[in-house]
Image (cartoon, rainbow, N blue to C red; front, side, top):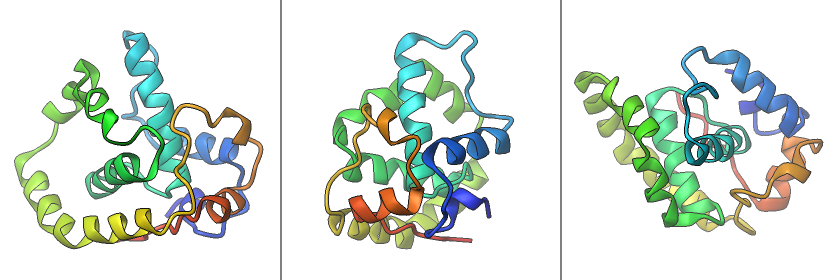
Length: 151
């Protein structure tokens, strides 16, 4: 488990993002990525950190639900998840892992949804830059974000 995933971490959002980027060699980078996809992934990556999700397939499902129901962008994100760069990621997934994740999601997704409903306010999808120097535990407390740890 990475430090930014701990519910009471003292890491800042900036440090959490650095840890998140250092942990994944398969993350989408800036080369050949459209401006729309670059902006989507900037916000998506911050959501991974603030909601305490890694890049495993189950955590990707979780961050998608957190993003739809716990951010200011809401269901409008459906379009961004259909960007060609996102589709390329989906095409690399194996059917077996998709099936296993779908089964586990049956219990995990409702728990994420319940936590979204208990938030004090929605995470600002595009407008989080001023929060970069703040501790994740303070941001989570302010927004009412309760990190869900799954193995």
